[in-house]
Structure formats: structure tokens, C-alpha cells
Length: 329
Image (cartoon, rainbow, N blue to C red; front, side, top):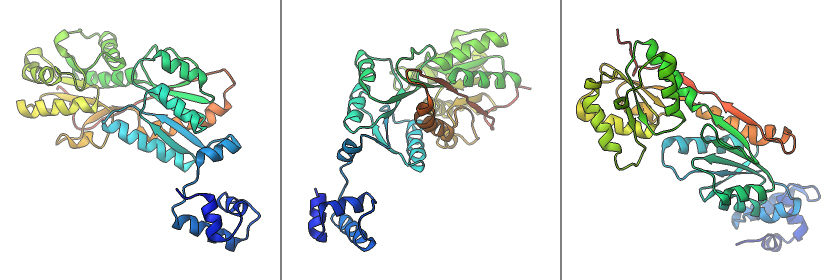
């Protein structure tokens, strides 16, 4: 791998001159600076960021601990976070390793800001790694009642999102509304809405499964075969991944959306809108706004927070009404 010494030798200048040119510091002529930069480009010189940060003990890097998930939501959100950070002069190091391993890697590169997407329970290793991390951590997501420790937290109002969906369907006249998803904050939003709207809880309208579960296809297909018998006129689906399974079953059973079953899905993604002939009504966070908020919080807000004080913010969600929901009248 080319080094600064290689550039100095090829340019016929000192090591100090090369360092000044590469770091855009004074003390070297513009002609020499251009010559050094051209040589660096020709020999594919890559700066040793870790060494540079060891000298100044600072970093414009943000570590992003991201789940190993293939759903479009995670792909798009990760991209938007990197774009937003880059527009503000930050670089993002993405890690899909275990959370404690990722934090150790960030420390080695002197990255002192870390964003962690919470997709599973805390481990003793992660708790210990947080205590050892010499910087700021922002946790994103999690579930209602998450025990916040040694980190800032951005919560997403998933429960509130499903309540928006339920209120929308109720206003359209739907009183037998099904739910497809797992036991989560979204399901809590569904069950609480039933109580608040004065609707009956019916087990047959709760299609409880998760993406990748062995019973997923069977449960969805079984519901689609019998939803008429259950009296269901609408359904809330808790993710884009489960929507895909639902659409397959709907086509197989000849179910028309929204003529026979109104539909609301959590997560507003371009990929969602290509699955049915009609535009799909959605609830959830705006991904661009989510990325912007994450970068705001891990930089400006975290810097302004008092030492030892960890804030909790809640990102609101939006209902986007489209063609997949209709009145029962």
C-alpha cells in the first residue's frame, strides 16, 4: 500500500511538504500541492485515517450499527443516513457485527459517535461495551418500555402509527378489522384501538406471525380463505415483508383490494406501491425525516446535552391515504 514516503520520493519533496499538501495546510506552494495530489491519485494513495485521528484525537466519523436485515426499509434508511451525514461533512462506518463488537471497532478508529438500531434485546456484552465506549451513543427504535441506559434514545411511535390506521378504517365504517404481524408495539396499538373504539377483540382476526416463521405462509393463506366467514372487511399489516406474503395469498384466492378487503400497511416505501394494481394506504415514519433526525440528534443535540444526561425523543408517524382503503357504505 502506497505511503506518504512514496509520494515524497516521487515528488522530490520532504515528508512534511507531502503531509501539508494532503491536509490542505499552509507552507507549500500551490504548484507543489497540485503535483503532490496528482501523484497521490496516480498511485492510489489512501490516507491512514486511524493514524491521523490518533494524532488529533478527533473524528468526523459516525458509527452505524445496523441489523442484518434484507427488507427495503433498512436498505433505504441506511442509505439516507449516509447521505444526510455526508451532506454535513461526516463519514459513516457501517457495522453489522454484534453490537459490542461494533462499538469496540469504532473505538479502534477513534469514532466517538455511534448510532445503534435496536432490533433485539440487550446483552450483558453490549451493556459493558456501552460503558467502555468513550463517546456518544444514540439508540433508535426498540420497544415500548425499553430500559434506557448510558445512551440517548430516538423512539418511533409505532403504536401510534397503527392507531392512526385503525381510526382511519373505523371512520370508513370498518368494525371487523384484522391484524397481520407479531406481538409488538404495533399489535399493542391495534389492541388498544379496539378498546378505545369500542370494538370486539376476536382471536380469528389476529393473524400472529413474523417474516421467516415456518407457519407464516400457512397462516396468511388460511386467513385469506376464511376472512369472509370471519366478517373481516379490513386489515392492518405490520411490515412490507408480510405484505408480500399477503399479496401472494390474495392473488391465489382471488381477493380484490379494496373491494373485498381494505388494506393499510406499516412502512411507506416505493417497493410497497408496486405490489398491487392500486396505490396502498400506509402508516409509518418518513424515512428521509428519520435519517435527518438521527443525524441531528447524534451531532448537534448530543453535543448540547449536559454530561450524564440522556434525552429521549419520539419520532411521530404519518398516515398516507391512498386507494387500498374504502368506505363500507
